[in-house]
Image (cartoon, rainbow, N blue to C red; front, side, top):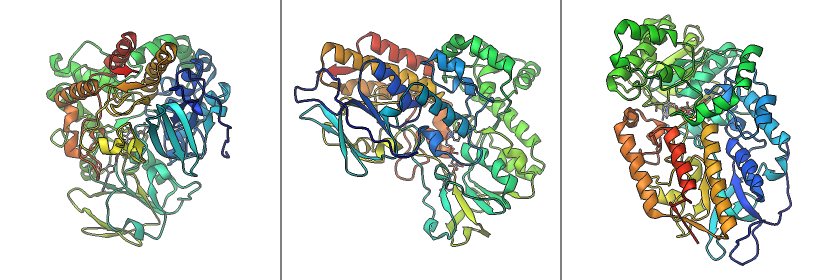
Length: 553
Ligand code: NAP
């Protein structure tokens, strides 16, 4: 797809400081779920909107993560936007977890069906966003030096999109292709090649079984093992599809009212610690049907009580071990509660990763204890014990979550400070959607929002943003100023909740959920763990009360 060039439209904003009009009422960055939701809701509110994306197609994370085996970990029928009941009925998912291409095709379908392309400018990187104090507008600058102004600036850049490149010596010396997993080269032929994969998180877990089918050899360098849950993929049957489409209102309500924004049947009203061992085992076994459901639809205390969490983790690792032929290898692939509790790192979903290690061409290297990586060489990877030769090296080393994309280029607020500078030690926000000293700027799923089924959170955020903008336009305000005390209160509440959870132990195993995987910044509280449903309630209450966290001028 080529660059879409759109002539600047007249803004429809009614309050523009009396100094003319900006190019657009709203500018968004990121043509993924967030950008699509923004276009829908803001256009419905009568605003002119343009969304920029540096990718060559819509899709956001699904435009970038083109590695073999990439698929959603949420189930298809609730990993989607819900604003159009017609699209929910019309679109046909082919399976339980759609692959990357299918999800991107769905997003293209929504964009085309809703005639959104005129609002989207692809192949355009934004290199700076600056608040213009004299006008009360934002100005964005593109990679070619063009500038556009708007009244409302919205980041929809995604909370897992800025790659974390590891500080391993010699990365630039390798002679073959070496790249981050989210920058998979178009058309790369890995059949018959020796592939080294550094990292063993959710991305590797999806990628390795696919690579193993045709690569000569796949070698995974693992630092920390994961609690790996089975995906249990299955096709969408006509009966299942009918059941879903007959019940979409209930599915949407389930997502809205679930602690992780998922269409799960929980809470279930029972705790593992109150359940006799035999009964517990029966419930664990009966619910072993794939997806994160198992964690939420068995017992309510698995993520709350250390004892319950240990029982759950032990059950998962017993299932993992049963699928790996070599007992020593199985041990290496499995964490224990002493390493870290279940969910202190985000568990991957597995489509054959464990079985891949039963093949002769797939190898695991323990770089935590046995043989740490020393450097990348011209021909491969050198550990403290061996030299490995590769044709291709994949850095499946994760992302600078939540704040990374907002820190990657200067976003300059009212005081002249960038977000990156503001967030040196604490990444504070108001509900993950607004930041003090950054007037008229919104974030979709920014830091201190929950970690949840993303389309659910994205839509809830955009509904709040749109309600705020409607109020401003209706009442004739030029700017909103996020209040510093509201930011301090949300940051404290988020930190207090975080400290009480088992997830807080993620810092000892470099969890991205608290930025503990980053070389450039320290671990911090990035996620509101008070429950996505309570967070959505807080957004609704804020809107109903006229946005008391913001000062309108
Ligand atoms: P990740 O979970 O952060 O895993 C990164 C891996 O790289 C870890 O094994 C980490 O080891 C390793 N690593 C990092 N730096 C290293 C270094 N310097 N030397 C050696 N190893 C290093 O990243 P990810 O697998 O890309 O997944 C990130 C998140 O993206 C997931 O948790 C998930 O939320 C999302 N994701 C979603 C889907 C989906 O829903 N379909 C698919 C893929 C990813 P340590 O663990 O020891 O740090």
